[in-house]
Image (tube, rainbow, N blue to C red; front, side, top):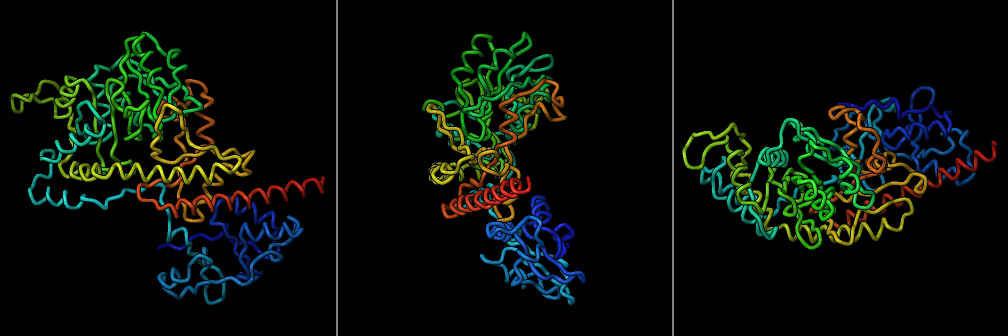
Length: 497
């Protein structure tokens, strides 16, 4: 592994605590290495060291040597990486590596060795057994028994409709648009906060995505903004059940009926979510799901279209399979696509569906603990939870109010990463992105505010409650540290003023 550039981590003993804080604010690993005039390391300095010094009436103008930890542990440049890793532990999170003259030349971090991912697949069921069965039977491509088994399991879970496997959630959306006759000259209304695939497929169909703001309560498409965006060119609405919380589908469907619009539900993040007791995906004309590795269930890549309209599913099946007739082999009725799922992917899907109830139950316990712990912290907003909705919390997502919390979203994410806890920001607004017009549609206040404040925390199917507790404890500690530092800054400012 390449050595790190430590130039931003190293300060002379005479540097001020304020200078150290500015360096730490850059998110450089949470530690300053303090060196003398010869470059020899004399101590380490962290946020905690600075906070403790300030609470003992130190000044921001004091030198780092007055607050640094002189009893630090270091590694030797001649030792192996395995030996360095063995020195890390609960009390040693950053290990400076020194050369023969005691000068810092590298650093090994606990966060690099032990990292809690924001999400990861859980493959501890029959996944291997079913995939091996595919290999043994040589049915490894887009034909085989697991395709139908997966589709049937999916329909059974949703409680109705018909289902069709696809190669991804994105191709599921594209199939739906094409099958519904949406193309050049048409417009599709899309929420401003969603993954780019929702807009990309509209463009690939030859139509134009028209973005509208989101609702501040649900974070999903705002029905009050939809109607104002309808024009004679509008042909469909694409509500996105964002981060596992369903949209207000009654309101969406009422607008669709009034203007004779199609409704394509983007359910990529919401398998198992419910709207007024019904599973998301079967309210509109078509529901589209994703099975990417970070979703509630996974087939690696893969997707599913569902509908109560059997004729529409049949048309999508033809389009998915190169536009070929089901009655006459190699006879193309139209120029279709190869959007098929493999039998091996479907085998994974069958095994995952066998465990989906356990996955969702586990998420409920995770969310309950997150809510209980983080709900006590002023400045952290909890995820949406409308009375009529069941949010499955694809990713447990909070909002960060800098004024109340004393730290902004990006700083909190950086500090968590220093502790080995991965996070993700909420999707940026589509209307601000180069691919979709660079802001030509004006401002979307709710979407922009959520994008500035939203943060997704670890929410894997297999995450332990101990891990959730660790995330919460770490956030609590970071907030205490940051508030103490800010309070001292304010006090120092008053004294100098």
